[in-house]
Length: 153
Image (cartoon, rainbow, N blue to C red):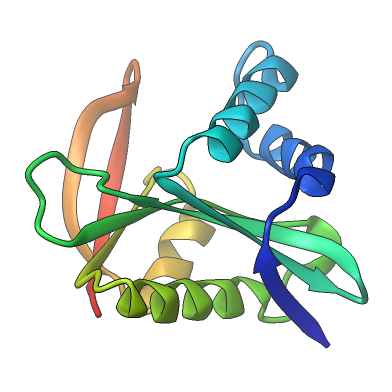
């Protein structure tokens, strides 16, 4: 049985390792540690973990006020499930939880950004009823585009 809760300091190492598995930076450990420090120190982030068999199996992060001038919009900036726990619905559960939380916080719309090269992520977000809204050319990294998906709550 899975359980979702706010991330705690005890979860930092697991979250760092999940981020390292996701990113392709030249120094992924340093980058992942910086990201996690920001997640825990910046109150714009709501960081959640999902437990399976009392083990942190994944995490997700909601960023409030992601886009300057936006009206009650937030962004899911991280979503990762440990490889050992994939394909059992934990990602779906995290997104459902975030969406319910966002509704309670009077957020009217959620966005998520992913790479067009990440076919499994593109399919996942479409499956979760997120609609393709934009392609940002050469946005995050040189010669790498990003897709933005959105969902009205």
